[in-house]
Amino acid sequence: MIVFKTFLKVLNKCKMPVIMFTIMLIIFGAFRTTTNEDTGNFIETKPDIAIVNYDENTGITKDFINYLNENTNVNEVDNLDDALFYRDVSYIVYIPNGFRNDFLEGKNPKIEIKSTGDYESSLAKMIVNRYIKVANIYASENISEDKIIENVDETLSEVAEAQLISKLDETSISKLVFFFNFANYSLLAGGIYVVCLILSSFKEEKIRKRTIISSMNDKKFNRQLLLSNSLFMICLWVFYCILGIVLLGDVMFTKQGLICVINSFIFSICCLTVAFLIGNISSNKNAINGIINVIALGSSFLCGAFVPMEWLPKSILSIAHILPSYYYIKTNELLKEIEIFNIYNLKPIILNMIVIVIFSVIFVAITNIISNKKRKID
Image 1 (spheres, helix red, strand yellow):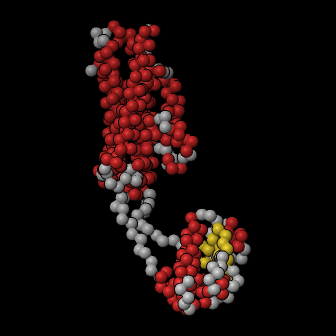
Image 2 (cartoon, one colour):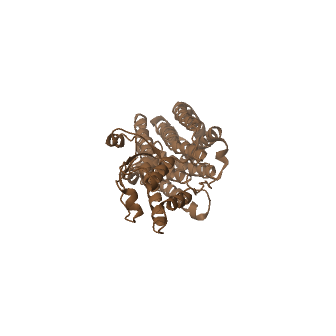
Image 3 (tube, one colour):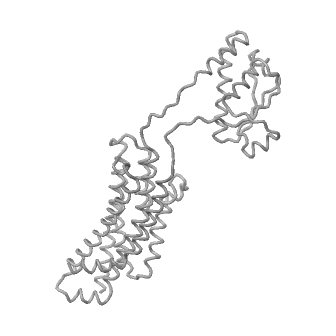
């Protein structure tokens, strides 16, 4: 109890940094939860194109232009190259002179195009190719031009209805993942700061001498100190989970929410082992802020806590593999894609959690080695 009471006194002095990290989590979490992102609806878009017609506007040529007008946004522009450069249009269709006659004679005339190469131009290309392919099929049947146009229009009028069958609430899951990703920084920074300060306080010369002359042996002292720090880390984790329920609501009680909670608990234990390792390496209180910046901020930036993983270069992610934060955040990111929970889908999540546990064991082993060497020196 003496160790625990002393621990609480030191912890009381460290409350402001923990409150600061928590406020940051609340601010960013609340900002994310108030954003209205609707990712559950399918909206058909029309690409912006321009048409340059060198042929007579009649027959199959006229029908082709009408088709493009119905399925794209045809813009009238003065300078085609400038319009393409400034993305006023993404696709330019050049209908050559004699297109209609060559088409009816089965010569398959070429339509020249210019494009920006983006997704809108790819969509425009699909629309153009769809008409040409269907028209070529009916032209090969040696029927009249009017019949070709009639059959082409009838075929192309059959539009497939796009319906999203996924029941995954992507907006809520995205907010959940963002909250727990950002908690990577709060857990690391809060855990390292508090645990390192507590360890350094207990290593002060006055406290060490009192511990040595007391009736309590080293093993009991270290065990109580470890339990006290573990209790703090668990309380910090529980507080962030409760904060998640307040900010995120019902999504915390889904399967995705449960996995995030379990994942964050395992990561919290890993944060504790990291803090113990640092606390045994350095007892300089002035160096703790620098250590937090290097480890907590560095891990968060490299592993995707602040910037989504899909936006980070592959070279950065390759480096991030050596950090436990990568596997913690990677598990959260996987939840965006999982709708059916089975052993196949859960396998990468379980493996990531096992890797975090392995990191924790490694940190504990290194801490024991360092502690034993320091004890021999003392």
